[in-house]
Image (tube, rainbow, N blue to C red):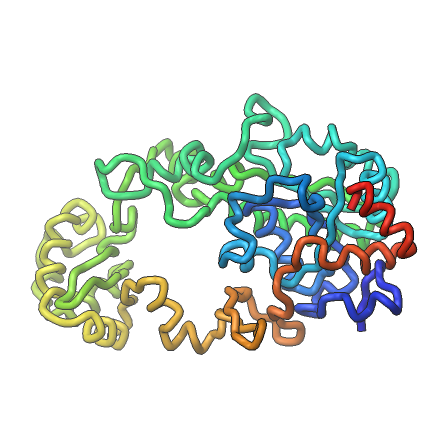
Length: 409
C-alpha cells in the first residue's frame, strides 16, 4: 500500500516500494547534490520516507560531477530507495509547481550555497507561507551566515580547517586527509538526525522549522575528545600516527604475515597482554609498570612488542590475544573487511537484483527489531517518476506534456 500524499490510483504502480515502515507517511523533497546532502536524504529514504529526488531537466544541467557517473557505484549507493522527477526551479512555472509540492510535503533538503535558496525563492520564510508544518534542512560548507558563509564547501577543505588533518598521520609527516569524506558524511548524518528531531517536535507544536548544519560544524564536533583536550585543558593535540594518544600501548604491530591492531588499555588488560605475549618481565620493569611509565617510554615499549608479534601470524595473535581478553584485530583491506565472517553475519552488504544480476549496496548500520531497513529500489533514472508525481498532485497528461515542452519538467 502506497502512503504517498502525491499518489493516485493510476500512480500506485509507479511508486517505489518502502524501505521500512519506520518513517512511513513522511514525504521528502530532495534538492541535494554531491555527497553531504544525499547522505542526509539516504538516511530518510532507507527508513521508509518517500523521497522525491528533484533534478534539472536533461539538457539544462551540467550534472553532478562530484557524485561520479550516474551508473557508477558512488552515485548508485547514495541515491537508492528514491523516486525521481525533473523540475526547473529557475523557471517561474517551475517554482510555482515546486511550492505546490511543498504544500503536501514534510521535509525539503538542500545543500546549495546559502544565498542560492534566497535567489530561487525557496528559503524557509517562503516555504513556511505555503506549509507551516514544513521542515527545511540545509547543509552548507561553513554555516548559513558569517565571514565564510559564501565560500564553496568541500570535504577536504573542512577536514583541514576543522583540525582533523593536523592530528592524522605519522608524527612529523605533515597534514594528512582521512581516507573517507568524513566531514561530508557526518554533516549529512547529523542533518538527518536534526530532521528527525524536528519531526518529533512538530508532533507537539504542529509547526515546522529550519534545520541547518555545515561541514565545518560537523568536523569540529567529530574532534570529540581531541577538541575537549584543547577547550578544557589548553592542550593542542598533535599527530600520533597509529598510536592512540592516551591509551598505551594501543597501535599497529607487525606479524610474520602482515599487521594487527592491539588495544591494551588499562592496567588489567596490559597485564593480560604482557602475559599472552610471553613477556611477564614487562610487568615488573619500572619503565612499563604503570600507565604513566608506559606513556613516557612508549617508543621503546612498542619496539619490544613488535619484536614479539613479528614471530607469529596475524591470525594466531588475534586468536590468542582475544582469548585472553585483550582487544586485537586484523587490518583488513576493503574486500577483506566485507568478506570477514562477522561482517557477513551482520549482513551490512545488501543485494538487490537488476537485469537479472545482483547489485550490492552498503546497508544501514542500525538494526530495528520491528521496522528494519532494506534496499528495495535502485536509484531512479532522470525524471523516471515525473509523470506519476505530477498526476498525484492533479496535473493532467496534457498539462504535463505542456510543462515538458517548455522545459519546466
